[in-house]
Image (cartoon, rainbow, N blue to C red; front, side, top):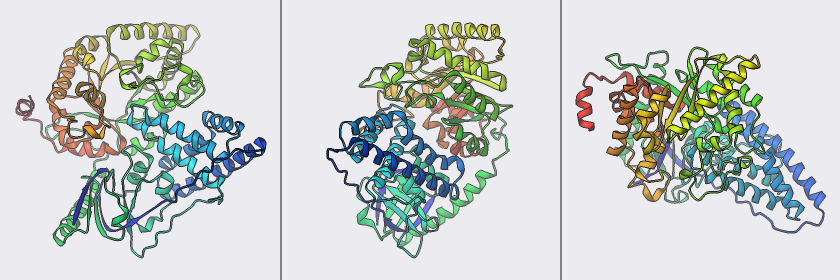
Length: 556
């Protein structure tokens, strides 16, 4: 028996034979073309065939998962049509590069740009670029010219666990569903579309296993998606243990569904709001189906990335209106664009930086680009009449930043009214607390805004001076470090002294083991990815906070 530890990205237990999936590696030719126009025509023909195939994969995906998740493959089409991508490819061909090499180089450049972004969600998008380009490259090399969705046939009589070095979204959705038990890979990330698809398909998945998986093909294995374990050739006792664990997990998932419609309050009636953290309009239905009490965070920067110019006021207004109207009687918090180096916003002239996390980002960029910022604020305040809107400011670190924003908001509201346009007088303004500096002056900040939101991912990273994605720091990275607990308590206490609510988001909020601690600290709202909402609601409802004083003494 051999036990390997990775990272669980989709819960549950899978027991069965490992089937190693080895994707054929494309050999990218490199030669100088004679007829540039003919090569451009070959590229454009390949593009149209690739788009037809992605449409077919989308149709196939809709039969296996929801349309919200299937939209991944429509996004792949947008990647191929992206003006920056097309420009890179066409310019390379005009320099006499062959189409395959031009596509490969363009996709690598864009993927590397995403890979260097300091936000994990956006880093995970690099695989989508690679996936879309791979489909186009296969067609250009006549490896895959079918216009229909491709299904990967598994040469096995019984269902298997798919093992691979890595899986792209089109690989994941292409396996024949009846033969799938789960996935285990060497690469991958929590927020990749491959991981999202695995969760939507209800298949246990473990990523980042650090031993070659090909040598285990054909052997019986267990994957534990909760603990991130792969157990190869388990003994009798381990098999019995995990069969029982699998049965308990199935019952637990049914119990989570029973949480829908119940109040998010403890046994002794302490209430905490549970809202959704989303980045796309397509996430709205998933938030609703998981009983979200509104949107606690919409990351608006997704609207601004990888474009030749920023979306105009009309496009932004329509997006914000759609989100706000989706939750007519509940709060919707939209964070202004959290821009930074490497997010494909060349129109803002953001300098390339060695360390974007400590550089020109967030509110700093908005204040340096006043018309860009004013356009977003106008769109937000115009949309505010369609429901209950809160506006959140990222990366706040000084009172001067808040004063400037409040003055701009008043100017914009007056301008809109002079034009005869309506805007709500009840829009709440909040600040993201994500640096030790902001935490220390949170008493001052909370006096000037309506609410505070703690970004625990960044607060931990900046306080410990550690990148949570740096695998060399895994043994040192302590998200529950005493300094973090004290800072979170300081922020909440300061806000409550000024009668202002505090919401919290980040990876630790999805850890049900510390839900009681967050309740003890009197957080007012937890903001979670939709998939984690019911799990945390169950944890809240199972908690008794009548012994809060005892718990606080243990924590501090």
